[in-house]
Structures are given as structure tokens and as C-alpha cells.
Figure 1 (cartoon, helix red, strand yellow):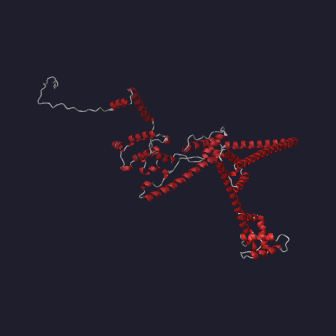
Figure 2 (cartoon, helix red, strand yellow):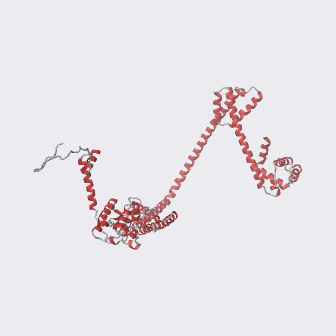
Figure 3 (cartoon, rainbow, N blue to C red):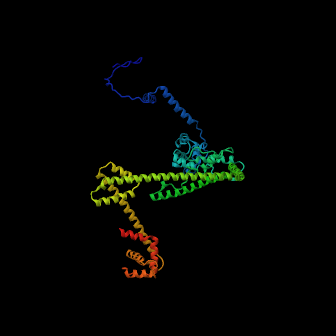
Length: 519
């Protein structure tokens, strides 16, 4: 190891053995190293970094351009009364207020801290209040509220500098636009919707005016009054107390919100009633209606003048139209008749085809009795089936064997019989219901309310047939006959028999009895 050269007038000497060299790890740090790493990571040149630095400097210079207005009463503020203080004035932003950006609020707070921090004032020899009693707490509270979007919106909703007054009608009669335009502009800040329509001027169209008032009559406001809550739920000692406080606050907010919407409605109603354009539009609408009415009267007069002249032409046109209509009806009837004839022929052809096919196969049986029965069933099919069903059945019989054809015919017969059975049951049900209704609604004496069994009804029919019209004291004889042969033991009078016979005749219950016997 080489010793260092001694200075002039001095000598170099080694008094003892030197220690071995030690390797130390040195890590680069500092602003220039960080800039180098940043350029390397993003593959950017030094010029890019210079642009970034210039951008940061320009932003800082923009913050420096923000002019703060010193609040003269700042040092006299009571931190305990922070809720009644103007936080924009506290931060020196009273001239821009709700238009201030978050960056401006942050810069203003930074400037106020640098100027009014207790440590700095204390170093300058100024007397500082202890704890949270110093006015600097008001600056901190103002920044806390204005930097939070939710709290800031709550404070903006009760901005002490906002003018909530509504112009009176007397103020707006002479200078409507000069009075109401600024009022609507300042209230537009509460709108949830952007692009709030302007009040306009006398040259605004009806559509523009209508859109303006429609917007304000359906005004959607974001203004809320949570800032004015008298109780803070954070101070509650238990959950029940917190719920009670929240309930009280919600009720107070709802009341203030209702008052706010009433204020907006009053503003719009007052403007609408004083708007000279509305009066102009109404006059134009009135003139338009009068012109339309006059035009209608003129048209009516001309119509009356031409009515006599047109009467003969209308009669002639009506006659021709009637003849044309009659001709069309006649042609339609001919077409319908022709179609009906064609359908009849087609049905007749299909029926004959079905009969012939079944006959050729000896009605699918070698037994004469079964052949006769099958012949009756085939005739029933011919009577009941429609054209489409007949065609489908004939096509099936044409392309199948005898056994398959028999199965197809029997299937169709079963379907027809089932349909006839359902129809018969429905008819019987209707008749049975009618009989019950007749028993309930029968009038004319005690017999109308007496029960008539099915045997009594059959006995009545038999008696009516045994003693036809012309028989001396016919209905007394029929009543005596029924009382003699009835098994129910109910005594019938001539009046009972007459009323029941009339009711049954009206309801067609005789047919029901006949059907019952047939089954």
C-alpha cells in the first residue's frame, strides 16, 4: 500500500501496521438518481424529463397565481362556533366560493397553514391560545369540510351568501327578464341535470319557453340540509339514542327540503304569471282559434250554398252505390253458392268414396250382423264428419290394408261416438239444470214450491197423454190421477199440475225425459 505524500516541511512515517481494506456497499440516492431511474424505466430521454419538470413547475406556478382574500375577522373566530362560520372566507376563497376546485382549496389551506400555524406565530412572539381554542382550528375545520365532497355539498346547500329570495310580481312587471334571469341562473346551481335552459328573451320560440318552464316545474334539486342538523349522531352514547337523533334529523331535513321545493315552485309560478311571452302566446292562440272559428263559419256558409246543388249529385251517387252494392252482394251470393255446391259435391264424393271402399271390403267383416252394424256406423261417419276429415280417412283407406283400414275406420267411429256422447251429456246436464231452475222459480200456489221427482214428472206426462184436451175438468182429473198413483205421497192440486205443466213445456223438459228413457 502506498503512503500519502507528506506536505512540505513534513515527513511520512508508519508507526504501526495498517488494517486490511474493507469492502462497503454504496447505494446511489438523490434527485438526479431518481430522475435517471425514471427515464430508464419508461425508456424516455432527458428531454422528456425536462418536459415533466416544466409541467410540475407550471402547475406550481398556477397555484401561486391563486389570489387569496384575507378574512379580516379570522383571528376573532370562535372554534366552538365553526358551524356558523363561512368556511370559504376562512380559507380566503370567498371570492370564488363553490366554483373553487379541490386543488385550489388545497393550495389555499397550504397558504393559510404557512401563515397562521401556531408554531410560526409563536416563534414570531404572538400569543397563542391553548388547545383547540386557537382560531387556527377554524382553518383546519374549514379544510376538513371543503375537502370532503359530501360535507362540501352539505355546506354549499346552506351557503350563507346565497340569495333565496323570490321576486314579487310588482318587481317583475316592468323589467321581467332583468329581474328573473339572474334569479334562475343562481338557482340553476342546485340542478342535478346539466345544460339548464336559459330564461331567454322576447324572441324565444314557444318550444323554448315551454321547455324552460317544463324543466323548472319538474326541477330535480340536489340541495340538501344535513349541515343544519341540530344533533350529531356521533355524540350519541348508545344505539337507541343514535337512531332517535337520525330520526329527528331526517324529519328536519324533509321539512326544509319541502320548503325549498315550495320556494322553487313559487319562483316558477311567479315567473310564469309575469312572463310577457306567455301573455303573447295566449293572445296568439286566441287569435288562431278565432281565425279557425271564422274559417269554419265561412266553410259552413259555402257548404250551405252548395248543399242544394250537391243534393241531386249525392242522390245519384247513392243510387249508383246501392246498385253496385246490390250487385256485389248478388255476386258474393253466387260465389258462396258455387263454393257451397262445390263443397257439397266434394263431401258427397268423399262420402260415396268411403261407402264404396267399405263396401268393397265387405264392411270389414264376414258376419252379416256385424256388417249391418258397421254399415250404420259408416253412415254415421258420413253424416258427422267434415270434408277434411273424410278426405284424410279416404286417403288412409286407399294406402292401407284391410285390417289397417278397419282400424282407421273404427278409430274414427270411436271418436265420433265419444263426441256424440259428450254432446248428449251436455244436453242432459243443461236439461237437468233447467228442471232444477223451474222447481225453484215455479209460481202459482203451494204446488210450485213442492218437490217434483223424476217419477212424478213421468207420471204427469202419462196423465197428460191419458186425458187429452177436451176432457171434462181435465186438470182436476189429472191431479186426482197423480195423487192416486204417486209414490211420494205429496198431494197435488189442479193449479199445481197446471203450473208445472206450463213450466215444463216452456223449458222443454219433456225432451229431457224422452232422452233419459232412451239411454
